[in-house]
Amino acid sequence: QLSFVFTVPPKISNISSDITVNEGSNVTLVCMANGRPEPVITWRHLTPTGREFEGEEEYLEILGITREQSGKYECKAANEVASADVKQVRVTVNYPPTITESKSNEAATGRQALLRCEASAVPTPDFEWYRDDTRINSANGLEIKSTGSQSLLMVANVTEEHYGNYTCVAANKLGVTNASLYLYKRVLPTPPNPFPG
Image 1 (cartoon, rainbow, N blue to C red):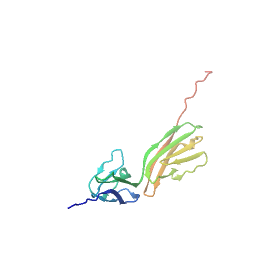
Image 2 (image 1 turned 180 degrees about the horizontal axis):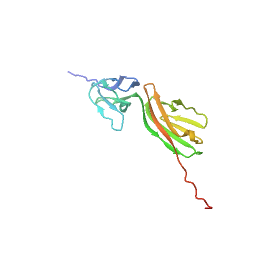
Image 3 (image 1 turned 90 degrees about the horizontal axis):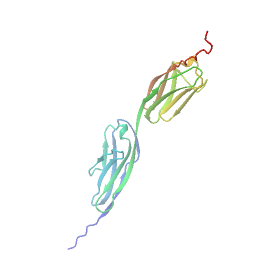
């Protein structure tokens, strides 16, 4: 009596779509595959140190996801018949801003000055600058340049009234944070008098 064993290469039939979640959420990724013998499903986080989540598990559960767990996740379906089928899911993790650098500075009157503020956030933060609770706009010799995670406040020609405390505010839909920066007065050394007494 003859018995035939049909073998079928592994094929992923259903996988989660790319998703965006807030930090702290619980996430379940799904990867289903067909094949004969039954494919073994392996999940892997595609980072330099990405560990594998082994087992014949179609579901990958991440409890209380952190910003470090964002990125691409790879599902691999393998059996001994043919090369594995591989697909990826991108997980984006939103989190509120934290200011990573706020750089005070000093400048002499009549010179240019620069204050820098950097924040880490997803989505990218919006920046605002304040002086004594009054919002600063790009006008009157002041220019604000914000690109991505960094904002610069530039003073074209420093006068006495520019010295003092400034506040950088970074915000996205999940939160807001601020930092204080200071513009100090730099006193230039006076040149020696070429004609003493």
